[in-house]
Amino acid sequence: MTEPQTLTVDVNGFACRVWRKGSGPVLGWLAGFGGLPRWTPFLDRLSEKRTVVVPSLPGFPGATGHSVLDNHLDWILAVRQLLVKAGLDGVDLGGASVGGSFAAEMAAIFPASVKRLVLVAPFGMFDEAEPATDPWAQRSDAVAALMCADPENWKRLVAPPEGANSVEWPIEMTRAAEAAARAFWPLGNTQLARRLKLIEAPSLILWGDQDRLQPPAYARLFASGIKAKTTIQTVTGAGHLADLDRPDAVAGAILDWLG
Image (cartoon, rainbow, N blue to C red; front, side, top):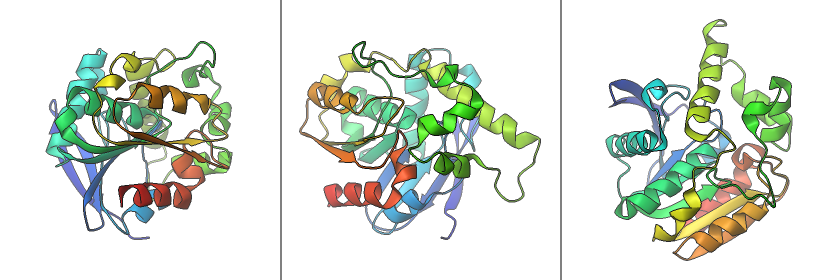
């Protein structure tokens, strides 16, 4: 697996990393909880048929600037800046978990900015009948099992890469969790449900059947709220971050749907 090209864009005066790899039509991707400390097999599979562009959200690995984002509108505008500067205005856009919620917000608030929308277990809603688990209220040793059906997949994602500073690395991962908390705490509910009806982009929703953070029933809630034609696919053997648990299955479903 070769490494992607790395670029940097400026958002609110802070540098944000942008990865790019592959050829063909562009697909933008926003990472889930914890961000992307490393290029993953899922992204590599997508890049076999697409030019995959992966901007890092403020505060996630490879980016800073989350500390100046004080409310949800601040985050929406920052993500919009990030996508435009990464060359992702008007293309297919997807995201998982935290990133999925922001992808949905872009499609709802800036409908011309998203051609087709792919969501993998996005944050942004809360159902009292099927309450989501608060990831920020967990002991650190419980997070892996909350994120993936196979906890080892999460541990491999967040393990220090070769050559990483042993002191700085834990700080960087803590900063990613803090950034997500600034955007979504408590319980990930940003009232996105009120804006789903504004989404005009055809949408694909993927959800792991073993998601312990947000039950798979949330897929139907999202689908029923989105105005455009929406397809739901269940990913067997996958947890919240299905792209980590089942990279080939999730990437294959996305590529088949995009055509």
